[in-house]
Image 1 (tube, rainbow, N blue to C red):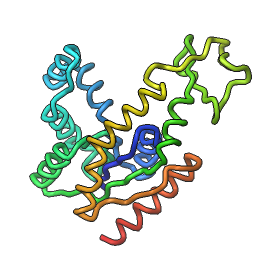
Image 2: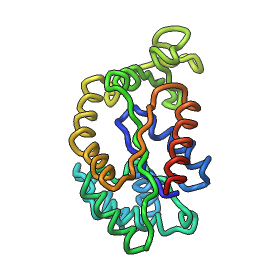
Image 3: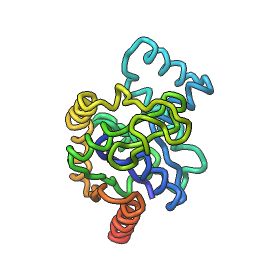
Image 4: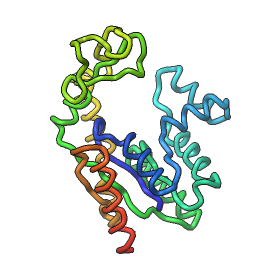
Length: 220
């Protein structure tokens, strides 16, 4: 299957993308991974992207699209892929459609993870990270440390990253509503959108997504 995964920040896209890609035996292609891979390999696209990032500018759509095209042409993506973080706006969605048309293929589904805004804010703003080891992550509601403000693993101080503050999260949600959410309507017009609730345990959401994708696949 060829799938685009969308949803607001905090809906669990990264976690679900990894699990779904594994279950469906297709590569998980995220824009973050694309940028990191191209920059670390010092490809021409990577150098170009880094020049924009170093200057504090957004990487232009055409660079992101070129990276995605290169990745989707790899042998492991021949039978499908799961795109996470791309397309990020209608312009990128239109470019993706054109790219797929030239290859004689098309998307099978756009999986929309839905979560209430207050829950999204609660999920992200409640994160606490260890200053000694950022791999140690807790949550004030869903995974609280035994002692408030202290890492269970190494005793380091737990803190809230600036990116996780409520004000920053709400700004990210504004950007999502303005730039990314319109692609849902764009793909709805093509009959590709499958919407599921992102609420509940991780495994429950994965199962819900797989069932919805199977129904979509069977209907085609």
